[in-house]
Length: 111
Image 1 (cartoon, one colour):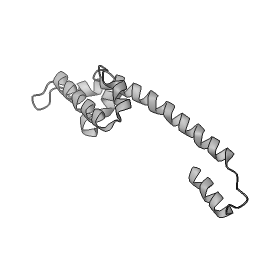
Image 2: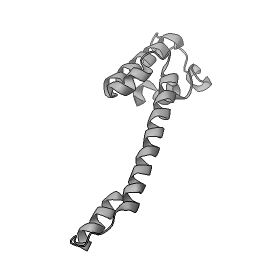
Image 3: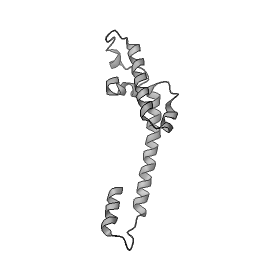
Image 4: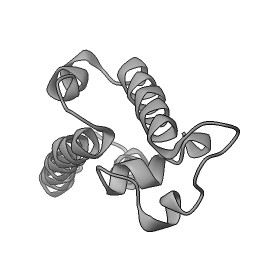
C-alpha cells in the first residue's frame, strides 16, 4: 500500500498539490496514475477485510470514503472492546479456592 501512496488516497478524494507536482511519470498521466492506484488499493482492502466490513465499503466511490467508513466502524468496535475488558477487570474476584497467583496473572493478561 505504501507503494501506491495510500496516505494520499486515504486523506483526500482527489490528488493533493504535492501529488500533482509529480506530473506524468513513465508516460502515465496524473489522472491515470491516480485511478490505477485507487483500483489497486481497493483491491487490497477488499481482499483483506472480513465480509461484514467489505459489504459496508463495496459501493464507495473512492478510497477516501471507504477509509472513513472503516475508521468509524473499527473505532466504535475498539471502544466496545475496551469497555468489555474494563467490565471484566472490575468484576473479577479471586475465588476462595483459586490461586492468588493465577488471579493476578489473569488480571495482568486483561491489562
